[in-house]
Length: 76
Image (cartoon, rainbow, N blue to C red; front, side, top):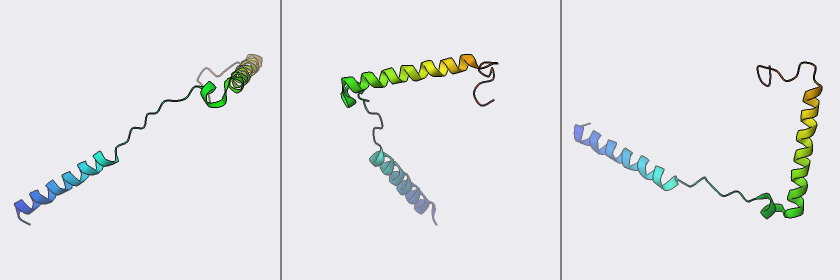
């Protein structure tokens, strides 16, 4: 291949790659709805209460461990 043909092929590859990048780019960010908007106020409140009760229960279980949580972190 001549240098001119190599240049044309490289230019076409660059144009193809850049156009595919620009055409397939999408915004991945989205606004998350508040729990009240999605489920309703009563269900969201009950879900928050359940979450708090679960956290309290886990904290109580951790306090009952003889050595407490691992100083090196979870899984050790």
